[in-house]
Image 1 (cartoon, rainbow, N blue to C red):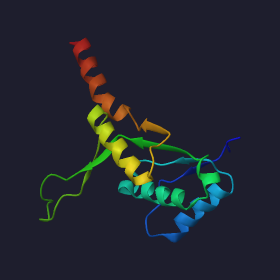
Image 2: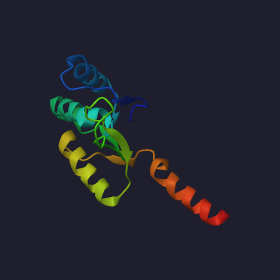
Image 3: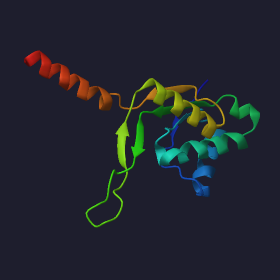
Image 4: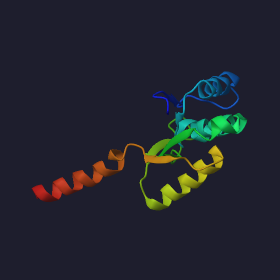
Length: 140
């Protein structure tokens, strides 16, 4: 039976032994679902999850369900900031099929296996402008 508990990994960071150790302990202790995303830490979370999976005994690893998400990506800030420095990156959203394929390939590489479920995170971010455009056209 799969545990009802899910290990959320939005704050897992590479190089923090306690993060890796706590996830490993949770999975050995019976948690069987891991929730992560391509955007968590710029892929860092998925890399930590992948390393933890590699370190698990096969009898545990085979039962782990990985749920990852795509949709968010970071773009350059697009120009100089007011003080002459580079503008900070912007968080953007995409649900384009080519972006999904790229993100799935990148997530698979970071995790060391394909995720069992690959979800579109916050689809309303990309759909909202389309809905607003349609609504304006209907009102016109």
